Length: 98
Image 1 (cartoon, rainbow, N blue to C red):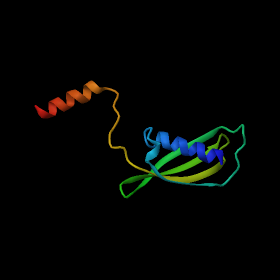
Image 2: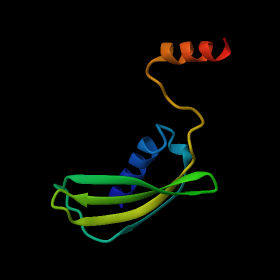
Image 3: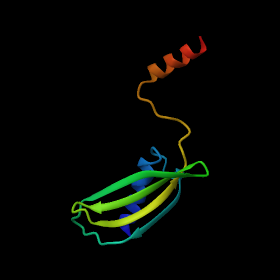
């Protein structure tokens, strides 16, 4: 139960670019066991679109490669794209209007 919640938190931060409220649907199924000392490997894949939202598949395995949790999430697309170099973006916008 805790693992499912932790993975939901991870999806909310990674797939939505730190906007966890953009996760519209989250469904997972536990298909194996996880132990306290297991290292978890979470894979997110963009698999389709639904009503303009991103559908992501979730697969979680332990360090031995044993799959124990699978599922999907529907995520609202971000309205803006983060950039690290604001100067380049600003220069580009000026060139577009000249």
